[in-house]
Image 1 (cartoon, rainbow, N blue to C red):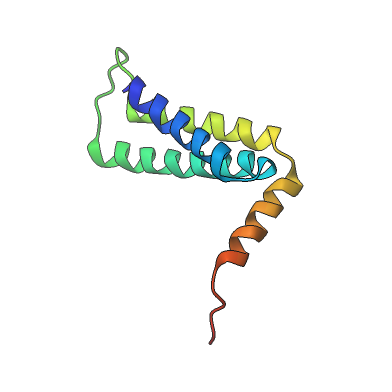
Image 2 (cartoon, rainbow, N blue to C red):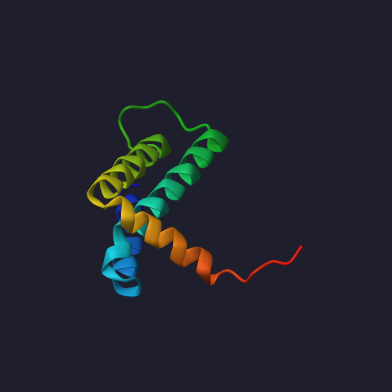
Length: 97
């Protein structure tokens, strides 16, 4: 489980670092980790994992993703997040009513 957590954290970080502009890395990484945390929570609720304290559970993964996502959001600047969201909206085709 720890290997899965490491891969799901490190792989998006490396991809974001290579694919995005430097000022967009932290906001994108933060948003991605919050999404991964939500998936881990849904999986933990559906699988009803045991409450054993001996091993890492999906709840632990969700907490780790959330903690790292919050840290990335704190270290990023608000204007970087606005730039990321504006750039993402510009990529969408204009919908016509």
